[in-house]
Length: 147
Image (cartoon, rainbow, N blue to C red; front, side, top):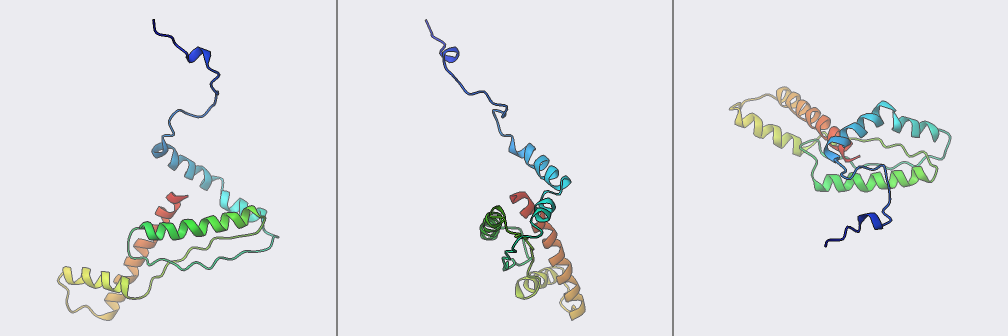
């Protein structure tokens, strides 16, 4: 005869779901934070407090977020949240490195693949700007998903 011990145990009762279902719930949570302007409310609540500034060495805007970029941003986020919890005004001002060889190299590769070997400097600069803006928008959304 099998004994069912479930009814004899004092198990905790909670409103939490048994499964986190993060894939479905994460976008809802982010949308709620944005709708409530949670970050703005936190900054407004700390408006008169001492300011803590973290100068962020920005990532290159030349590709998807990778583990090194994510680690860098997560560590900085931890520092800023800690300072905020200590009562300081700790705004996060993101930035991207949109100049230099990484972007120019990628754009040059794309131009060569397209068969355009005689592109003038204005065309290259315009292509570099478009490339950088594309990856700034992409990385911004990826960083939001990190929390």
